[in-house]
Length: 259
Image (cartoon, rainbow, N blue to C red; front, top):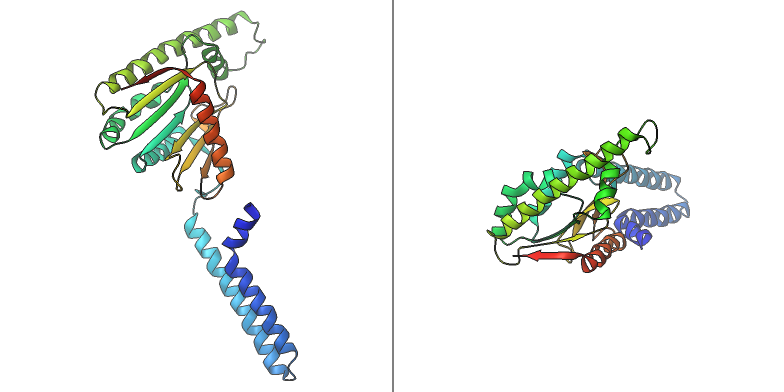
């Protein structure tokens, strides 16, 4: 499928090559050497011109690598991208961890978006579940003397307590928003599983749907992650894979709450 898509994207180039070969073959059969050299020269100049135009278009379309499959983005860049997705979408599906800082930062904008008709499905880790321990472990720095070291164990326990408090704040914020927004604008569910990524899906069933996947690693920088951008029109197979993953977990999650 990808090979066919690439071929169709470069169809003009392949048509030009085919026509050039035919012209050169026809000129070669001609007795007049001047006509043959002229045909060769014109063909080469045309090919060079086409290549230069395509190169210029690629530079203008992708000056900073924004269309790359994967990029390393800090949270500021990701937040800007996510806010842009939210402002342009009618429905967003989000699957992450605790959403503490992110939700508080984006709450004012979200209220406005809900009032214009935005619908959000939100998946997050469940309080007092093994997922909280997994998240605390992920955010912990590697201990110098192994995980059995007493200081490391204390730090790990403190991380769990901190996350529990933050989750409590997140749920309180969501419940407060549910009281002020239109009916069915927001639904969140919790689960005892922590995925190795966060997913943001914009207009899931739309042909123009797109998503962001922010990978997470143990002791990795939470504010700087490998981020994969996927458009449904460009890679429907990979897009549908993450869409199916979200739906499967959504159906299995509990703690549903809506307005």
